Length: 145
Image 1 (cartoon, rainbow, N blue to C red):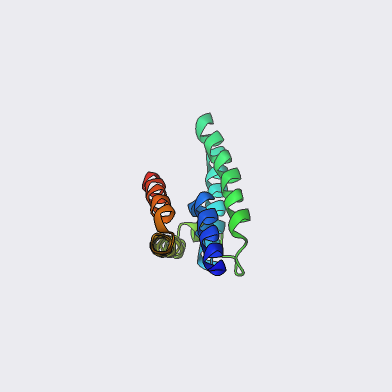
Image 2 (tube, rainbow, N blue to C red; image 1 turned 90 degrees about the vertical axis):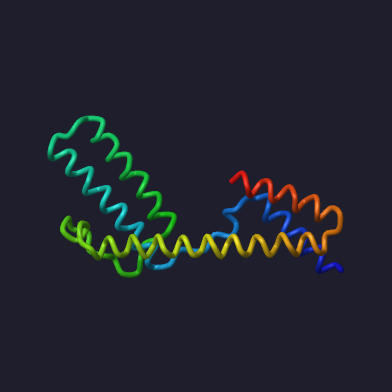
């Protein structure tokens, strides 16, 4: 019975902290994609300056470089750095890495939804009336996100 109480406490705390709790650590493909995003942003900013593009475009591309650096720092640097010269960035290999990363993210989101649904069922089965009320609240929160 004590184990059940800890399980319910874990579920409640996990749910209160939001959906980001069940986020998987990024694999090498996602890290490579984040790296290539940053390198692509840098190349775009450089091209915008070199071609003396509109000031707004230059500012936007400079901001994108900063934002993409944050993504690299969050995901981590890949073990094997992909080529980042302009021709490589525009190659089909870079596009393939982006597509693979997108596919992995979509499949992980499906798994996360499955895990959340299993936790909700367990809560409703073992939580009694309070569990049923909490289940309703969590379903409403999930629907709104």
